[in-house]
Image 1 (cartoon, rainbow, N blue to C red):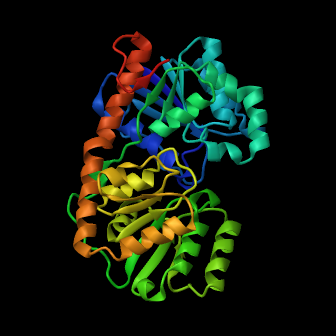
Image 2: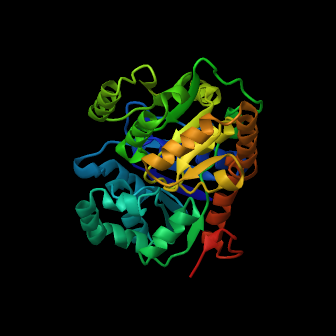
Image 3: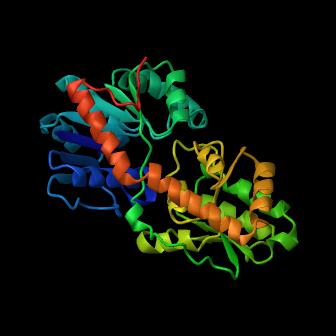
Length: 382
């Protein structure tokens, strides 16, 4: 079985999708010898990886011309021997090139929306996206063999746009082996509240700053928020200005991104993880926090209702007041209770979101698309 993946970039700066795609491919290659994968992506300064550990996997980096069109990608897609094309993300030209070539060559293709069809996401740059939908994006989606969503709410968003193809609901996975299976020692002086993600206005960081300002000063004593990640420097500067104006420089610290073992250690040291985002199709950092035995506060802009049902954190409405209330509750929760919640989160990830389980489901999807037999339980068809 030969699969060709296309994603605009796997640079470290691009966040969750780059990690999810590369880790997924690695896991699939480890599960079966009957798989060959080409990953086509754009050139970048700091790619997450430059090749896979298996010789049956290959990464091809392409230069882009105007509007991210790539001659070398077009040539690769036209010549490559493949059974299925699988594109990740919307609105950018590489995945459109893939869809167009798949139709020309009469090869089945999958598009993973990566949260880009969520209502909040569609409102950002609304006019450009309406134009893109009319020119090419809706056609690419409507003619896909299958669409891939990472959560039930994303399936609903796709259906609400009138798209009728089969939709595979497969979550993103976590490389659980990267996260030690032992309860960590949490930093106590001060206790840490961690935000670790791309620093972008979508992530609700301003809500976190304003909620923190509203907390009682006595409650904030011996606590510190670490905002860890990369983003546009102008936006980071605007956040720092808000922090400075509130005289919170010693309570809210913006720090550069971390990777590998250092990132895992940062997750494990935190007493709480917070992602006050406006919209996420999945939120891989939430899964990584839970794998690190760290309770999570996040919003209903994410599909993480399981935080409530598994007593692993707080799943709250979007806004300053709900966030302030959740922080108040969490910061007053006894250490032993937070530790139990951390254990619940780890167990949830092990049982449902391990990379092995996710890779197995994706392989089932590919086989179903090629053979049209034994439709997987996670595929929704109308």
